[in-house]
Amino acid sequence: MAFTTIVGAARALRDGSVTSVGLAEQVLQRTSMVEAQLHAYLTLDSDGLMEAAARADEELAAGSDRGPLHGIPIAVKDNMTTRHMETTAGSRILSGYVPPYDATAIRRLRDAGALIAGKTNLDEFAMGSSTENSAFGPTRNPWNTDRVPGGSSGGSAAAVAAGMALGGLGSDTGGSIRQPASLCGVVGAKPTYGAVSRYGLIAFASSLDQIGPIAHRVEDAALLLDAISGHDPLDSTSYPGGIEPSGARLGGGLDGVRVGVARRLGGADAVEPDVEAAFDRALAAMEGAGAVTLEVDLPSTEQGLSAYYLIAPAECSANLARFDGVRYGLRVDGATTEQMMSRSRADGFGPEVTRRVLLGTFALSAGYHEAFYGQAQKVRTLIREDFARAYRQCDVLVSPTSATTAFPLGDRTEDPLSMYVSDVFTIPSNLAGHPAISVPVGLDRHDLPIGFQVMAPALEEAVMFQVAAAVESLAGFDTTVPFDPSYGLRGGVR
Amino acid sequence: MAIEIDISHVARLARLELSDRQLDTYGRQCRELLEHVARIQAVDTEGVEPTSHPLPMTNRFREDRITPETVLGHEEVLAQAPDTEGPFFRVPPAIEEA
Image (cartoon, rainbow over all chains, first blue to last red; front, side, top):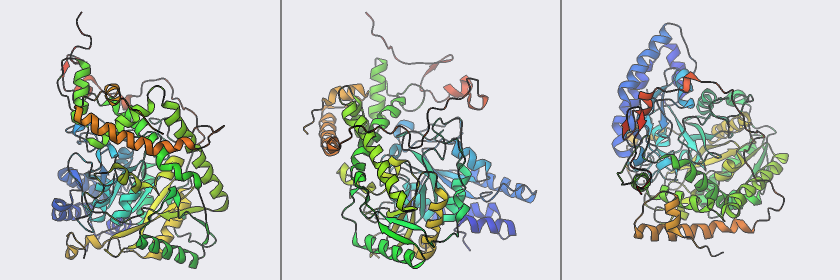
């Protein structure tokens, strides 16, 4: 029998019905079956995984139990540094880069006993919504290999969905955990800004980036988040106060919970009818379970996409200045330092990253800074005020995660703006710094998964997970379909 | 709002050596994107404070001391460099000869 959940595997490890080595073998066997078609991993560390699994078994046998992640194989997005394991951020400019240190989130996973199975594919430097912007080729959706897995954490979402790891880490700047989780039929959560240390996360947009979990079950995601969150002196934006454990209120149900329905969040239009129908079914089920729903309007979030596409490129242009061919990464020779840097960067960055660096450099340049970046940061305040008003009436907000289900490869690569609108429902939470989670609730007419987003005020992860777990249980969605070997992997409409 | 971008100047600022054809394409795409996002300028933000951190936090400074857990030796620091000389990173001339 295959293990699909962390909680299930953890229980079996302790009652002796499986070993960590057995879990690692399961994951590697599944990977060998599907990886050629999916390309979820950039680095698969089979040997390291087997060794770490053997050590985890020895520890458990010796009575040293590190907790629920002990001996569990996890897939990590390749924009988090892993000591002595290649870390590329999906970019040619970092091809072959082997970091000398672990990101804090990675170190905490290891301390909790988790095993790093490998590093997963992503849009270059996490810029994209389909994983097609990876310099190392796209990842495909396990539910339908003609479709994208979403992005930018598409590799982690696909790996978890297809059983190539029992859980994963992604990073979310404008929806890069939640949108791929939605498109791949798994759970994905973006924590409150500052809840998880960004030390060792290769920076894209520093005021928006957060690391978070991807898993088959809401309770698994809560376990992963609780293992990696908490104050870190190595990240000056890390939240120093205590946060209630994410999983503290699982099983709390929906009775009396006030749910704000943000149907047009971010100015969303053109929501696919099947997505809207699945969303409404989930809402009705929530009402049946005692939730009180009311429609809410967050008008300033209509400016979210515009604010995001000024703030994110501006911060990215500053952050990516460090890739200059001097200390690590690709170098292309030039007669002067400046020429060497300019050639290394032009060769090392793909088109989407180049476009955003140019856009951000312009938006920050003399004479435009206040009109663009400054104005966007003020609009961000208006968006936070909209959320604050909504949360005076409700405990959580809900919306679809993505207006569409997984789209075909190549569908949105020609027109940057068509790709950018993929994130219209997810961007507002990043701008506000609030936590948000995507839970799968159904399939569309093409058998592609549909995600349901639950948002909560800053630091209210426990309430968010409580509601998400209730939605999950009401929807009864089977996330493990792509696990079944008889399901096979093929494209087209089934 | 019509936006003029001197794209070759921007590329120089960003240290990106691009071909004329690339400059044309990126210049057009950046202009289109900026024209789209520039509608943000119509929003009334009179008296609105910009967001710097979503939580009520100010800069947090740690004590000024060496943190051995984050200090790397020369060898490790230089291991990933494309070119080195002794304990230094090596680059082409930064200042043109007179």
